[in-house]
Amino acid sequence: MIRTSSLSLGLVLAGTTAFAGNLSEPVVVAPVVAPVIVAPSLDWSGFYAGAQYTLGEVSSEGTPETLDVDGFGVHAGYLYDLGSFVLGGELDYEMLELSGGGGSADVDATRLKAIAGYDLGSFMPYLTAGAIQLSGDGFEEDGTFYGLGGKYQVTDNIRLGAEYLVHTIEDAGADVDVDTFSLRASYNF
Figure 1 (spheres, helix red, strand yellow):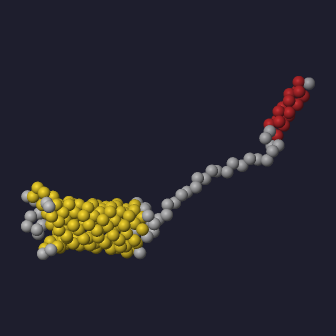
Figure 2 (spheres, one colour; figure 1 turned 90 degrees about the vertical axis):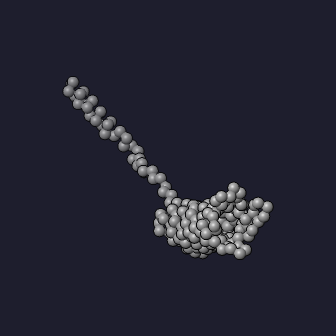
Figure 3 (cartoon, rainbow, N blue to C red; figure 1 turned 120 degrees about the vertical axis):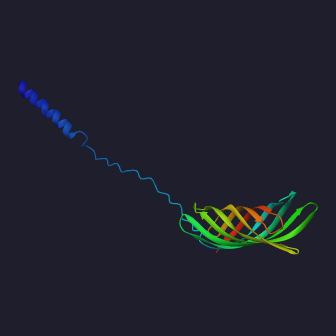
């Protein structure tokens, strides 16, 4: 009798464990997959043209007084996007007014620039350097410049930016330094 009870108890326990959880449909848990957001790739390559507003200061070796620079200009160039790096060139022209010391003078500035930038998507910081020619009433002087700037792509065609340049004019009898800051807007073709 003890054997029969043990055997019966064993069959009952085995039967309950065998049927436990099998009364309903199996639950399948699907893995959760996070969506992958890919930022659109922006290409800086192409021709562009635009305008700029410039402020600055002129200082000369041996002269304690500085002159203020104020003016508008236009620019045109080409950039080539190599992936992470962007290379290009630009030509710009500005009509500047130099004022200070009780007088003012109109000066035209023409720059030929090399540009090397880093592609951060819609923003591109860059370094620039090149040659400048200043001309005005009875004079023409050449010099060099270097600087840095940044461009932001508002749309595929509209770019806004800022640029800081340090110019050195050595042919003027004394070393003349011109520091300028420009706000720029361009249209990419």
